[in-house]
Image (cartoon, rainbow, N blue to C red; front, side):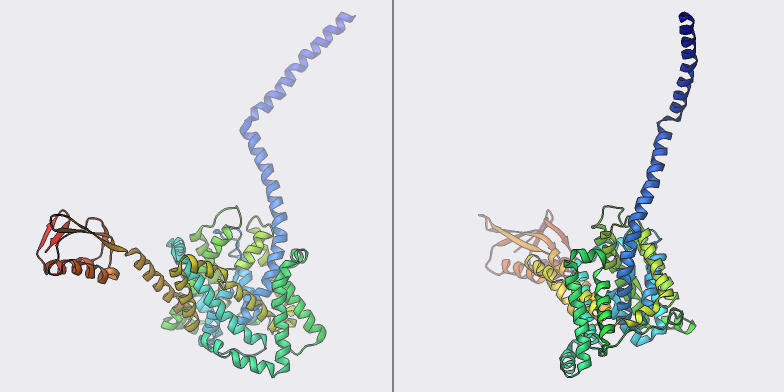
Length: 530
């Protein structure tokens, strides 16, 4: 009996072993590729879930920053606040979906506020849509022509000077709004009227109240980030505007508040007569200024955001196309032009965003807000928004960077200061042109370094070697040295030009003329004069 049971046991083991082997073979048939793919799919699902868990709160943080900033830029641009929010919505829902950059956030930028204000004052709010639409088309064309990378070749001193000049004009204009006063036209006029603004404010109690509200907003913006626990809960712009709004409402202070007209009433698409203005030289110049400055601000902002995270890098040409598409739609809606907003973008990165979903969601929250809760803007004091812009303008100034630049590269510092002054004295576009011209001249001057080395020999010759880059900028110095060597009574001069890396036509002609006035012998790439 025991033997039979053992036989049955062995028989059962013989039946089970092939079955287990068959199951193992089935698992082996899947192979490492299918196993790896299934694991990747599972990790992808987990990654998407984790990414959404990070992007959702980040989108709320960016939304809370975008509301007061969009309203600020709209007020500074002289248009209804709803148009600033519309630009933020388009920047999130449309530009946020397009390829180019994954974490930078687009919206109305303070850097363009002064230029937009001047354009609205000169051409009217109705023409703003055409200007922005044409700007978007120019940006799309530049992206298709792969010109995005060329913006990286612009001198950093010119960009910093452009931002500094914009900051000066922005601060000067918003100081008037801090006191509920109207700012004069032009950067110099704004600066020149500050003394009268001060005396008028001191004589007006309502103006002093508004100034206190605006100054308090600036103080909260400067101090709020130092309270780390509070800064994690509320962004500084939202906290500052909320506190100012609460104080004005609680004390019933006599200050100007934001006027809300409604989203449908504020949106004003351009009509046929507005498009006819594109034939005016002034309008075309404004479009070009919008396109160049918005593109430069966007791409320099993209470079700054890329340094903040380890994710995918920005494709500059695709980002330029995405910004152009967004500005085209903003123009169709009569809204403000958009750029990358470094404040929103840095907040997006710091909040832990991983994909472009955060910026798309922030656009959705803006749409919900402007549709359902526009009345919430009516209690915001204008002085508080002006305080936010004064703080933003202050951060555009170079400050310590200018001091370090002056110590290391005074030529670059001079270009920065000259660009800043040109932007303040003229306008943003002309100031940038002046800055680019100065930077080009500086580069040409530094590249055209040429020197003459002389060696006296015992046979009565002076061998002179010309080394470097000979351009018209250094031609007077070069000719003076040559003439000094060939004065009567001096030694015979042997001139060697073989170590010249570059010689422009002006220098070539001048040397030919110099040779024509002397007895010259050309030999081995040089010339001999007596």
